[in-house]
Image (cartoon, rainbow, N blue to C red; front, side, top):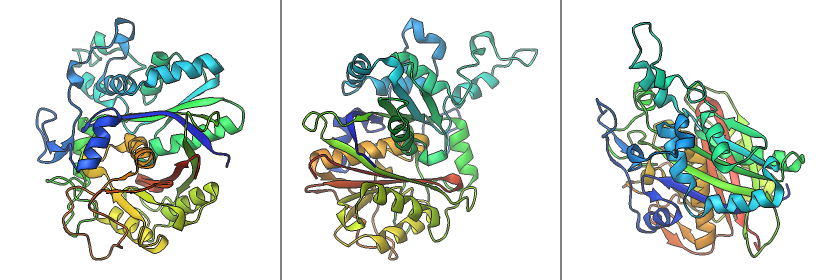
Length: 396
């Protein structure tokens, strides 16, 4: 594929708002996980919660969109000069030529849960909750499109944990086909009862901070996050030196919640991403692994990385920093991969004490510094929805 430039990017999670707190946490292996304090009857688990969402007030013109997910989107959008970068692109191309593709797993379902606790005597939502657009999976994209003043193609991708990785693939297709000149991509997911109690019912939630690839790992820690990137055709190597080089998508449909035991779909996505980028596995300097700390996911992905990449490759899971942010995981981990290239910072795997003996030397517990020319990020979701992305330097 023809590379696309990453003109701007940002992420907000439990470690802070924007790129600088994220880079600082990665540098010093500082986790943002805390004992669960979400909801009226908190599960005994650990979460990656973003501080201050309850206190955010949207501008009056946007008040009908109010919900936790859209408040997090608002907070995340206004970091790292992202609105200004989009405004410049809007002036360059026109608002109808900029696509918007966002990933989310649950969107604003937390607000719908709240509405159901306040049904009136006739079993109807209370008047302040009769906002049909908010109670839909597309709520996030409609809200962000209005905030950014865009009128181009708008998509919501909801493929579980691969959602906001697959947005880059959709952006490339829209731009290549001439349906857009640029795209805002990203994802937002927030904590809610459906997420916490749903994953707990699947016996996937850990009672302690998650420990990806640890021999004694006990499951995932859930989190919330928002991330965004501006993708466009290559304009200026000096002004935008980061590139999307390749993507791969596959759906093995092996099981509703368990990955294919040999990683069939995951490996197919990996192969497609490397083929589009024109790279061999040996060229990858850093891998951001999906690494949820669940038994099966780590087992399958650990084996895949061990058999496909040389021992010198630095690989890690960053779920221990902000938890598994579900539909936002792909974009947050893409931002981490872009930071790795931009700053030569390869994160470690926090909370993990002893790697499972079945995994290879690629998985590192401590951060490292060095040139990162090419970075790969994996996002593997329920139902076998898999996506891998390759990012690189313009000069690589």
